[in-house]
Length: 257
Length: 111
Image (tube, rainbow over all chains, first blue to last red; front, side):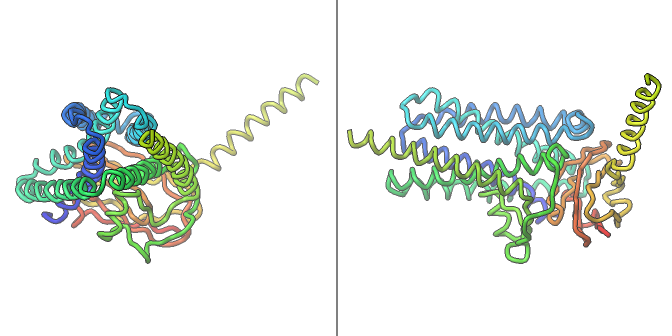
């Protein structure tokens, strides 16, 4: 049970930790105030509690697919947030940039935090589970937090230009993973008509393996994606790459002036 | 003339209803009780979309998860959660309850 709790909590924390560390590193690189972390975390904590408390009502909404609709919306809004961030990143409008980051963090916290709360709230009601779940939760959180810290220092210690490039690249991957999640949830809820998987790479990289889990957090790895998932992923990858390249060339031009 | 067109219209409606009934997505109910799935072996037609209704009768939440099916969903205590799966090629697709993986295990068999 201990290992299981570690893995469940780690998976949720990892997704939030990666995105937070990348935004922190980007803020450090462009010397943006990191106030957004406090506002985003607070809003996210409120969101997560609200979501977890109302999980029964949300689950039964829209004929039993409320969770999919809410989660898909959270992922999609987060995706839009990252797009806006990349577009605004060209300008020096730090007030808007900070707000956008705070919103992205709040959305990620709401999504991942609510799952942690639902898990812990359910299991600590069983006396035999209490200590392994809490201990496992702390270990999982610790590992996830460490990965975030590592990611932050890794980016910050690169040269400013290189760090910027890698951080933006990681943001592109994470945002495309979000779009993959949106299509996945819409398929699960039968809002998009499902099709057979395009390929099966589970023999190559299993989704259950450590590498599979890490890739899932980073790029939304699926071993058996449907055509619509692959196409939407590629579309968002192209769109995000286009925006990042535009932003990068704009920054370069400005540096030369 | 009027009667024929009306009966034709009725006939068309009837056909629609029959069609809808025949083509409706099959529904399979699974119950979670004391961290076990009932039934734990679920047979479904292959190459057909199926609606799983998962009724969690425990007082703790469970997360239905299957890597093979690409599905993951929290089923809160006392709630009936809906998950659509398929169309699936014939084969076996294990699933488990992520919150109680030692006991909550099952398998979808597409035939």
